[in-house]
Image (cartoon, rainbow, N blue to C red):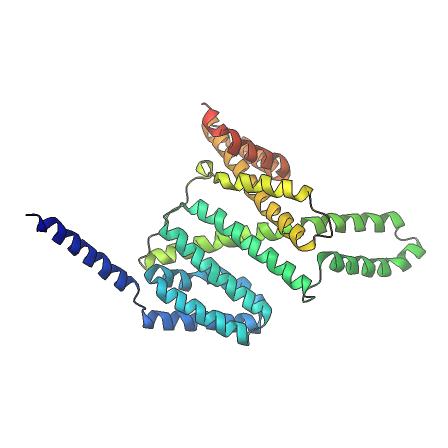
Length: 326
């Protein structure tokens, strides 16, 4: 009788060991096919980087599918694609294909963790935004891409050269040129925010396309919850305060670190803004406002983005949603 529990333990151990060995198996057919698909994507991006706009919404399907079916196969595929891209592709194409591999891994990990679709949206937007912004900083530091300051400065010089004769003829005034320069300065400050906003839309479109197709390939995927149920993880708030405080102690000479902190803050501000929209949506849902009022308040929320962001911060701190009553 005393041997029976031990024999059961041994059997369970053998079953677990078989499962581990099975999970370590590499599916050579799937690995080969998906490796060729991603290398083809890398080649297309290398030939025409602008093609990433058309390819990006569908680019996570092969890698994520392979990750969900066999992680060792995914790692082998990622190593092969990374190595070949590093050797034969341009630095821009390599950064793009590396982003596809990283985001495929993240999406696969989030799917296995069974997180909500909106948390996928937030997490992937934040990580991709940091990757893109840091990649841009790297290209600028290596003089492979002009800084926004230099690019906008050249644009001002061209405009002033073209406007010089018009000023002499009295068709436009110096005040018009100053106003144009001020508008360019304001636009320059909005560049990181615009990049993040477009990446948010890209991730949203990618999830809308990718998840249903993965479901057809027998991969379990979650559904979006309504906006009023969206809730950001508290760590985003802590990172936001940490980035804000760190920025106070940095000087313009700390180029790399300042760029990282500023861009991280841009990402987190966008997340706080979405949390503010979620709070507004919850308030409108509970109070059962008329449709025209809802539309008006959402328009105001976008026009007054800093205020919306502030309410998103308050919601994460004080859990305002739980205090709103019908």
